[in-house]
Structures are given as structure tokens and as C-alpha cells.
Image (cartoon, rainbow, N blue to C red):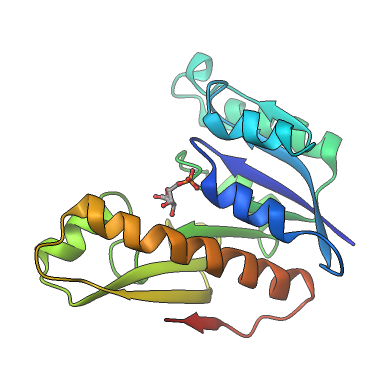
Length: 196
Ligand code: GAR
């Protein structure tokens, strides 16, 4: 059984969908939910599900990303995960940290990559006049929101959509896509999954 650590920054709805999926014959189990914000709402949700939690507040580290990541790494070494899932984790990771986990770290991003890397993806899709939008799960490599795509889910953009309306249409697809990709990945498969 693969051991999975889930990294979050906020409410953790993707974390919940991942954690809930890892039961029965699933090839993985959640062993840690780790946040960079001690107030992240997802920590209480994880604890309520009986998953060990930890927080490493990034703020006291200031600009010293490497020191922050050393503290993250220490928590991870205690939990001994085989796979890291970034799930709404809003800190940029340095190439040094990523190198330690390359090939074992997944991220979900709220756009149809390679479109709209970075922030404000829903607003940018609207601004561009796209008729389709969605989310992607990819392996994390040193380039931001890059790396092999392991799955994508599509939603239509509808007339009158706001960024919030679009986000609300994408999020339930994230909750379907990420567990499907993790199950595949934990089983050793790398064939991408496409959902619409
Ligand atoms: C999700 O929409 C996720 O795709 C996005 O943040 C949200 C987190 O929600 N991630 C990024 O923007 C990464 N740059 P959640 O905490 O409820 O899972």
C-alpha cells in the first residue's frame, strides 16, 4: 500500500475527496495532511477523518524558502509518504525540494494546462473568451504548473459566467479527477485520464 501525504493551504475540499477515496481496495492510504497555514480549514477536516495532521507556518521563515522546505521535509520524513499530493497548496516550491520528490509528487491546477499557469485561472479563461475550461492533474517538475499531465476534466464556459461561477463548476470536476488520477498513479499507471 502506498503512503500518501496531502499538502494544503486552505479549505481542503480536494484533500477531503482524495482522503475519502482511499478506502477498500484502493492502492494507497492517507498518512499525513500538511499545511503551510496553521489556520487552514482542511486541518480540522483531516483530523475529523482520523488522518494525522501537521502545520509548518511559512511566515516566520520570511523569504527563506529553503528553510521552510527543510521544516516541511522533516514532517514528511516522520510520515514516510511514498506520494505527495498538492491540493490547493499555494506556496511555490524550490527546485531543490521538488528534486527530492520528483516522480512522486502530483498537483491539481484549475485550468486546462498548458493554459493559464499561475493564479486567477478562471478570470483569465473568461477574459480570453474561452468556451471551455477545466482542471488538470500533473506531475510536479521544477517549472511552475508544468510537468507531465496525468488527467484533465473539462467544463463549458456559459454566457454570463463570472469567475466565481466558473470556479464553482470546475471544483466538483476536480473532486472527480484527482481521486481517479491518484488511484491510477498509486497503482503504477501513467496513462492520462480525460473526463468531461
Ligand atoms: C482548488 O481549486 C485548486 O485547484 C486550486 O486551489 C483550490 C483549492 O481548493 N489550486 C491552485 O490554484 C494551485 N495553484 P481546496 O482547498 O478546497 O481543495
